[in-house]
Amino acid sequence: MRPSRPASAKRPARPRPARRGRGAVVAVLLAAAAAAVALWWRWLARRQHHWRTALAEAIPVNSAYWREQRAGPGELLYVAIGDSAAQGIGASRPSHSYVGFIGRAIAAASGRPVRTVNLGISGATLRIALDSELPVLERLEPDVLTVCIGANDIADFDVERFEREIRELFGALPDHAIVADLPSFYFPPAQAKVRAANRRLRAAAAARGLTVVPLFARTNRQGMWGVTTQFAGDLFHPNDRGYRIWADAFRPAVTSRLAAICAVGPGACADR
Image (cartoon, rainbow, N blue to C red; front, side, top):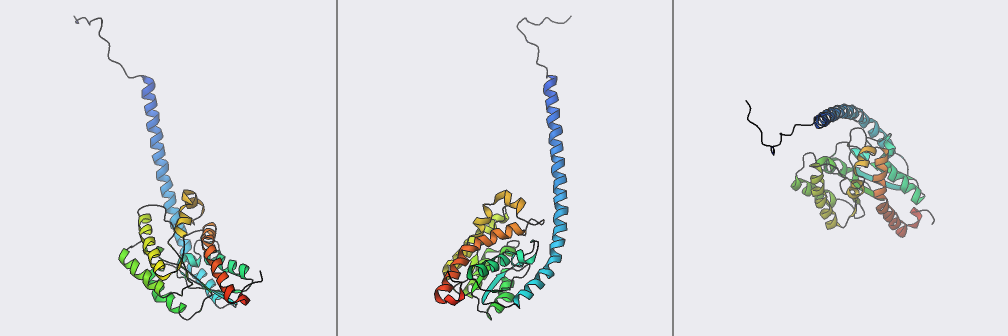
């Protein structure tokens, strides 16, 4: 015979079927979300592989285009030191690199034909720019010179080497050179390296009195919208839209340089 339960005693609460049902639904949704993320990452990896292959095949095409431009005529000489971004890798055509946009902006603002010498080399690091691009620059007398280099140094970043080489490069540039800091990489840990590199870059530019284009700030404020709309499929090189933003970042400094050219040689500029 069971002992009688006191009248005040309560039966233990039993799980309600509705709660168990909600828990099961949440578990299914979480599993589905995890599977969707995994599928998305696999799709992204395949897409990036496809784009990296396609963009690698564009390197000789872009290089040939800029060699032809180098041989063209022009009353003003625009020279660019850089890497694959200068070459326009990721754009729909080589002329849609930031260098192409800047060259056309110079022609429109000055009213004079512009010869563009793009010294950019795909994959170039600071060391490559020093060894292969700077010797060519020494034989030229550019009216406008832009320098955007160093992003490829982030993959194997050595802060002391970066500072030494950026100072060496800046020390060999003419006083009117326009240098850009490194663009935003958006995601850690690369972003922390970029910030460290830019501190050294700006200090080296200040020591030479060079104008610095705030490319990092201009690209960083694009945020995730910029990541999804302003990059080629490899998620590293800008697309046409992204390169226009780069060119716009250079525009104030280029405009100031043209004003200085007009001040010392009015014949180089259009009547205003």
